[in-house]
Image 1 (cartoon, rainbow, N blue to C red):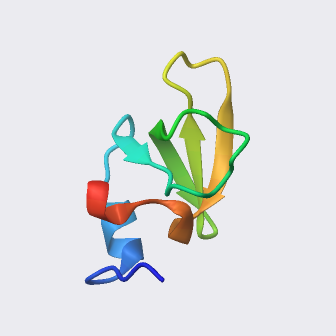
Image 2 (image 1 turned 135 degrees about the vertical axis):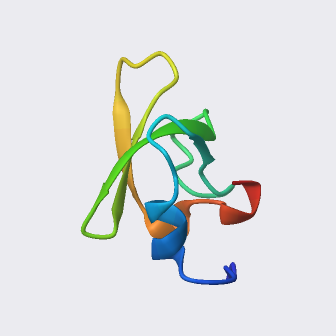
Length: 69
């Protein structure tokens, strides 16, 4: 399991809208893109938008590769 130093919530609260986040490898295999644009967080769910802005996904906090941020 991925360990994050500090609270993941504090990381998310400090991430500006528009920052690129990376979805961990091995998750959401139907998605080819690993990097998405952070939009917002609600109830421990992270809303991400594709780079072209046409669609988005909602993932859990633990689905993000925090070491890449």
